[in-house]
Amino acid sequence: MLADVTIDGMVEGEFRRAIETLLREGNAAHAAKWLKSRLESVCGDGLPLPARFLTTTPADLTIIGWSELADRIERLDALGSPVTAISIDLAPDPSGRTMPHIETRFYTDDSWAFSHCDRAGLLMGYEGWASRWTGRFAHVDNTIGIEGIDDLYGAVVLLDQICRPAGTASDLQHRAYMLGASYIAVLVHLAVRDTALERGLPRRLAVLVGSNESYPFFDAPVIPATEALICETPVVDGTETPRAFASPESAEDYRGVTELRELTHPDADPGQEAEAWSPPQESHLSGTQLRKRIVTDQSIAELENTRKPSLLQRILGRK
Image (cartoon, rainbow, N blue to C red):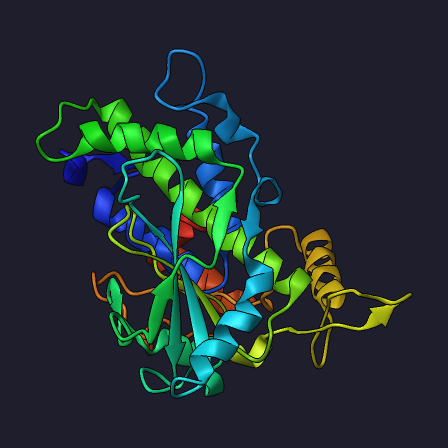
C-alpha cells in the first residue's frame, strides 16, 4: 500500500509532511532540488515516469490568466469585503482529462487577516494538513491556468489510477507516484512565485498554492501580502507596459540577493539568513512550532552529536 512505501527512510506521510514544511517555510527551491535527485531512479525508458521530469524547471511552466486578476478582483470587491488573498489550487479535472486543472480561490480578511500577515502570521493559520481558511473562500473560478507540463501531469494521473488502495502498483510505481506528484506541485509553487515576482499583483495580496483533493495535497504560502510586488502600468511610447515594483526592493533586487547568497553560501536556504532549525517530530506542526530558532555554529555541532537528523534535515542534507 502507498502508506507503507518509504523514500529515504520516510514513510509516505512523513515524506509529504517534510516536503510541505519546506514549502511553507519558503524553501521550495530546496524541495525541488531534492525531489529531482530522487526522480532519477524512476524516470526514463522502461521506468514509470518520462525522462523529461529530469529536465523540466519552473521556467518551463507558463501561468496564464495572470493579467485577468485585476479585473476579477475589482468585480469581487464590489460584492462585499475586498479580496486580500488568492490561492491557486491543483484539482482533479472534472472531465477526466489528464492535464493540470487549476482552481483559483479568492479570500477576504473575513476568513483570515491576510492583509496584515507576514509568512509567520500565515503559518499560524495552518493546522496539520488543513488551514483556518479551508472552505471559507469568497469565490472560486478558473481565472488562472498552467501550460507546459501536460505530459508530466498525465503520467502522474495514470499512476494515480493504479496507486489507489485497491490498485496493483509495485513499490517502484508507488515511489514514482509520490515523487512525480510532489515535483509537479513544487514546480507549480515555484512558477507561481516567479510570476508574482516578475509580473506583480494588482495590490497587496497574499498568494497561496494549494490543492483540492489532488495528491500530494500540499498547501503553502507563496508570498505574504506584506511582501507582495504591486504591478503598475506605465505608458511607454503610447503603449501600456506592466511593471512590478515593491518597497523596499524590486523583483530584480530580490533575485540578485538570492543569487548572491547561493554563490557565497551554496548550502544555505535560498532567501533565508544564516539560521538553523529543526522541526518537531510530531505529526501535527502548529504555526508556533514552525517558527525558526537562531543558533550558533557551536550549538549546531553539539546538536549534531546528540540528536538524530530530523526529517527536514534529511531533505536539506544536514546530517
